[in-house]
Image 1: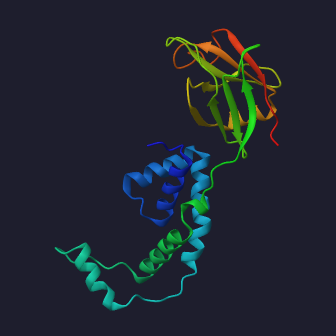
Image 2 (image 1 turned 60 degrees about the horizontal axis):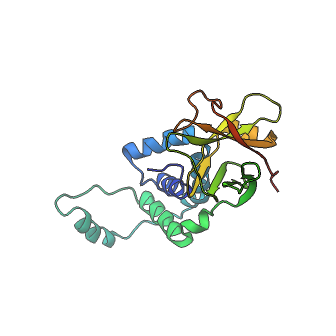
Image 3 (image 1 turned 60 degrees about the vertical axis):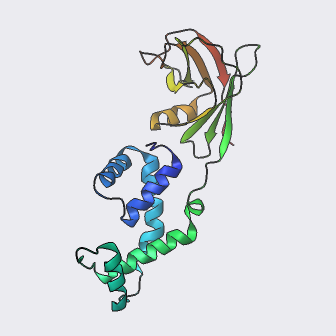
Length: 225
């Protein structure tokens, strides 16, 4: 499961807050929230929107007539215990809100801003790099023909503005587009950096955490608007 997909995070956060994410799945999402800022932000958005509605519910007990058909459908072989009436009312209200607003009104695709065009000297661009408006992610789009043997890969690096060692932004795609979530350190370095670099590395990227092959591209970073 791709936990870095924003739409997936929104669905998991909604299920967690509503209470339908159970057992191991619930514990996995709690661990994810400890490690990932985007997961924590998604959970907070749903809590901010839905929990006040549950707390403000009027005390109206469901009709006794509704229990018989419900029990018949969900547990024909055994009589289930009835949840407290306020839990039923809260769940009904939350589900109603979910159906009303829909996921697309809660989560909107990120707005992307131009960041850099990666091209060898006197050659056509190979990649276009953009960053999200909140600077938490980058998008890398392949725009040229990548001529590189399978035993090599291109890796993208931040060149810190105050000097110091390059910091990896991961291996560049050979085709298509990818989105990458930035760590807090990467975000901070990008905020003060003026250039990106591309080096040729073994498959999967540098084994040392620093460029080991030739640097073939150095490109300026556009400041966010």
